Image (cartoon, rainbow, N blue to C red; front, side):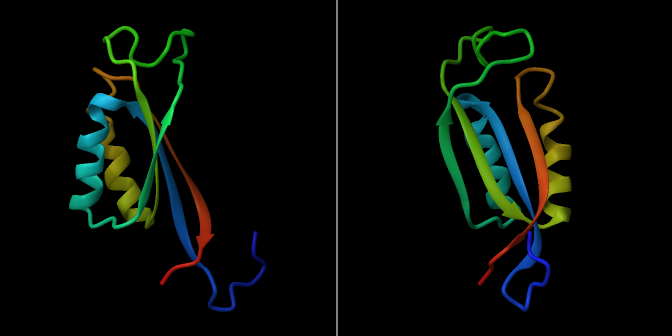
Length: 103
């Protein structure tokens, strides 16, 4: 990435979550409670490890991808909280260390 930030970029975490539409609002609420002010939400097609569409077994047909640039600490809280959804809903969540422009 950047060999030197020169004050232009700061270390951050890109948090990506693919989930069923029915849990999207709960996840967005969590982000808002953690004071995450900027994120993107995109409708996506997703399949699980068994080759079925995410949500097919539960009757949900829409899936969303949520991306947010957060601190490492916030990503820890989000990933820990998402664990409670995993037994009921298929969720894909991962984080990547990045350097981001911030204001």
